[in-house]
Every structure is written in structure tokens, then in C-alpha cells.
Image (cartoon, rainbow, N blue to C red):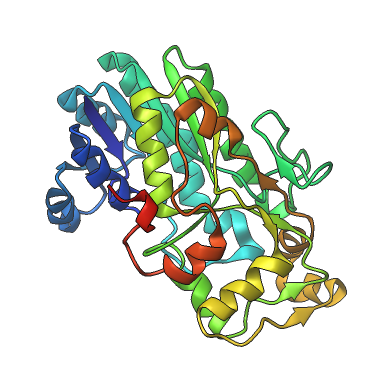
Length: 318
């Protein structure tokens, strides 16, 4: 098939493009920087320089590529994390999830594209009530932190627009990425002991290795039906469990602990909620309907062996 990857040089795009090429697909991939076209060529794609917020340019690029499937992987998080001002940090990504999504869907309609696969997220946006692990049928948080309201609205817009479009619209809610190109900043914080356990660390997180996220995306492109899928590993876990394990895996001292009353003024509401009230996600639907299994079934092995090593676990090679 002809595949148009919008956002081919992001952390996930760089892992996705070569997998699509290896599967026999003809890939056109976008970048906002002319200086990165060589990288895309090296990955096996035909590069095109386009700003995802320029509707005319997006429409022209899609029309020239004439793809069977569009994969929306456009994000913009190059700056250092700013969780206290989350919406400001995510401002461009939010624009890509709203205006960028509209441009891609309009281009798909104009060019007769039959399927769109779009990146979403599962984690802080899950409802903080009920059980610790959420399925795709569970609601998103109706009352996000003030600093995340715009980001939540952008996620809701993307998911609604893609799944309600007159084509096969697939939304992939990826868990927290780790692996080469995705987790270096988190590891630096852990090594510097700047990522404490807040309160009892009862917030549950779900992770996914970049290579497993790429494999799931290929599965969605090739055989996915319309709908929303959680793309996470098999092992959602509370912060109090995974954070010390990560510290040990990277040779750092155990994380410090911070009471909620102190964390709130120091780190902000986003951090406190995520660390104490977060909910994980189930991957049962993706495994069942996409015929996909994460090679790194748990962050336990992934943190020890997959943070910098690009080679998948032995059982997943082939």
C-alpha cells in the first residue's frame, strides 16, 4: 500500500517508517525541516517538507502522494517538559491535534483516502475514579487539571473527528513512551533524583516501548478496523512500583518521597494527580482485534534492556 506518514521524524515516526518499508509499503513521510529529508530517505521513505498547520500544503502533499492510508503522528515537544504549564508546553501539539487533524481529514476526503490512523494518548487523561485499569469504553477524565484543559480538549477533538469521519478512522491511544529517543529526559530526572514518589505513589501508569508502538501502528494500518485502541504493555503499575525499578535499572539512587501537601505547591496539581490518582490502560482490545502483542510485555524488562538498545527481545525477532 501507499502510506503517508505525517510526522515521520518524531520519536515514533523514526521507528515506524522503516517497519512500514520492511513490510513492503511505499512510504511518503513528512518533516517540517528540510535538513531532515536525508534522514527520511535513509529510512526508506520519500520525504516531503510540510508544516502540518498549513492546510494548503498538507492537501497538496497528500494529493501528490495519493496514499491508501494516512498515519497522523504529528507532535511538537522539543522543549523541556513544563508540567506546571502543561497546556503552554503542549500548545503546538494541541494545534496539530486540532487544526492539523482537520487538514489531514480534508486532504483524505479530497484525495479519496480510505483509512486514517491517528496518534492519541492514554494516561493522565483517564478518568480518576473506578478501577485502576481502563478500557477504551471507559470515559476520559471529565475534570482535568486546570493546566491540562486545553490538552484534554485537543485529545477529545482528535478522537471524535477521526472516528466520526466518513472513512475507516482509527485512534491509537499510546501509553507512556520509552526507548531510544523517548525516555532520555525521564532517565536524567531519575538519575538526578528530581522525580520523587508523591504521597504513596498510588497513581497507575501504562508504558509502551517505541518499537512495540510502531509494530501496533503497522498492524492498525494493515488490518485495523475503525475505532479506538489502547496501545500499552501488559503491566500497568503504580508509581511506587515502577519508579524505584527504573532508578535501579539505570544505576540511580532510589527516588525520594514527597508528601502531597508539599508536592502541590512545589510541582503543581498535574504532577500530584498523575502520581497519586492516575489510571492505567488495558491492551486486550488491541491484542484481540489487531492480532498484536507487545514484544516488551512489561516495563520491568524494558527498563533494564530496552531504554537504549534498539534490538527487540529475542522472542520478538524474526
